[in-house]
Image (cartoon, rainbow, N blue to C red):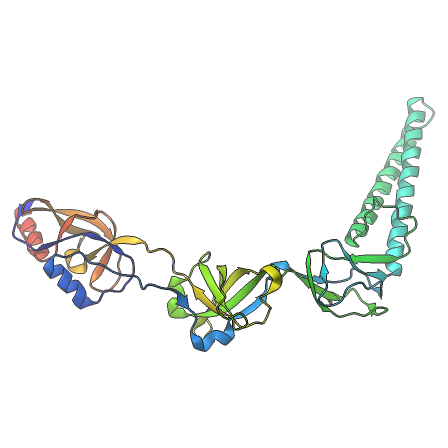
Length: 364
């Protein structure tokens, strides 16, 4: 420890954000006042020139595009665009020879299993009474295993087609029902009754659950530091002036648009009554997270030796001692203290260099 006349200041908790200028920091250091770095207040809004990029979109996790598993003719078409459907409702049916053949193959496979089970049981009984050879018994068991394997394959084929093998399929006429995989609204239909379709992956209709939608907008590169997943957002539209919808950020794009220097930000928004329509323009305001409190000290108070940062703190009336600290390596007049100091500690600002020289002379 050493005793010397120096200028010092209190270490104060401050709001974390780079908002102080160099002249403000110098004045605070000279006067011994606490430094306050303030985060800009209020919401972060998308630039007015970019509102055209903010649109309501379908929540892709709540959209089902219906494809047919087999080619055939569309019959019993029950829905049109705009109809509400529930999960499991029949949308239409496909009259397919392939479906009828698959059901027939399954029925034959089940009969083969029943016959093979009886044959194997009888052969095992005969073998137990020494009336059949071991080879005959093993052959019967092998035939049973093959029959069961074939039945399992045909049963899985039926499940892929949406048929339940437990149902009574004896009267199946080749009409394969196509059902809704989720509850929602039919937003697209590309077939008519009697039309022939192929199993080429082309959707015959689309269903969307509009109880939740996405609003996607652009945020400038410079504002990305203030946006994070889970952040609350407020949505306004020209369609409902004076009304605000609320949601949360659930995605921030991983790349920046080279032309606009913006990133896509997606907000998930509850949409009771389906009032927000896909492709509707929207304005997004992102609410700032709660301010984090940190400690800041002037850069002049910090010095480095052997790769470690130190400051001088007052440990008694006119008595100072060096203390190791962990500080951010940011540019500017202030340093953010990560560890080593507590709010209220008195840190030397003017005279730190003289104290260091005095220590070195005493050590020498």
